[in-house]
Image (cartoon, rainbow, N blue to C red):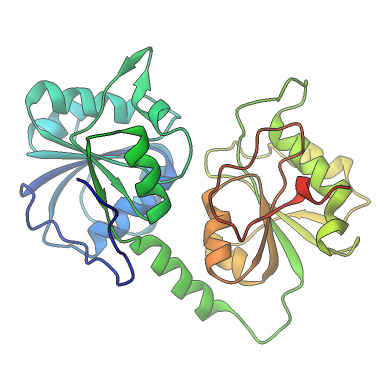
Length: 307
């Protein structure tokens, strides 16, 4: 594909030009949210699922019919094309792309973020690219075109984002939204220090939150990432009893975001959702961390506000 597609109008989700039987393989939440939203809008698609971890929990919560295939190999053997995520927590999706290549099946991979594009397709030193890369916005399309020159890159509508924005709007009330929602994520780096990066960012935010106009005693709700273990932040909350910090108990991210005025975090996708819903969004990455890789200019970089 060449050129840069115009997306001023929504692009309908359409699988009419693809094989009829589809193996859906994903583990991490990001791609699972995108893929399952697409399949909800296309009930005619005959999908064979092999999902695990956060993806399985999302599928169950959405009550999408269809049990997991007995094995990954069987899911792909019974399909004509493979639609996979590009998460980092397991090698499940990498293995799916390997099997698709071995069996001569069309392989489609969904990139759900704006970071580590090439690294998503490498496991144990082995790189396996799909036949098609699917992305959901112009920034991702541009970046994928640079990272995968000459490859088939397809821009698809972000139905998950559209659904979430509608739900946030329906849950908003007339009450002033005045608290902070901190959307957490594992940074997978300590940036040369002992403490994990996500905790360094938390401490940096607490020390400098006044720079973005957040009053000292504003309530701060911490919402862990779906991949994080329960209780991970309990110790940190206990050590910050003097601050108005609590663990977010909302049933969903939409519920958590509906009552927030500020949404802060490092560089998680939830920050983009918050930005699109009109919240003030702040990246809490400290000055000694790599720059925030989200391409959206509306996101305030707290480390850039220090004199």
